[in-house]
Image (cartoon, rainbow, N blue to C red; front, top):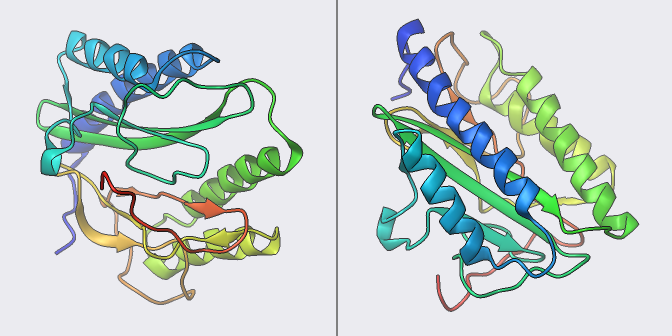
Length: 217
């Protein structure tokens, strides 16, 4: 069942989102060569807790970090650790904030200094696809419209969609119905209604769409 939120509940989610946005801005400013992903994790946890929140990811299914920190070809769910960022890297930072029982969940991919043209285009096209998908998030449209917006823009620019990882509903739980694939057919899937809140998560590859799970899960 897709849970619709009231205006008051959406305000509470917006408060969690404001903490999330400030945390992401802080981490973005700290991403530079020589910094470890564990150091970024520590900064994030301290900040989230200082705002009265809880890092949503920490302890979820045994995950040890407060953020997911995924460098370069690692797509998602990277465990913060000793990896030192290098010039030319990109780092996907995924943050979850729970505040007063409501979750904000979102990620950003941050360049570590100058990056090559292909990677610049990857980041640009992925952000554009997110904006296009968000514009389809209106009552009367369907979940397939969201996925199609991402897929059509990404593939038109020569990149590929990762099909085994998807977005999702979000609210009092980090993962709620429905799943939001980054591909789809317009006019198909559950109808979008006022009060629904989704985490739209374009995940895009240079080259093929395939991914695999690392040894640490």
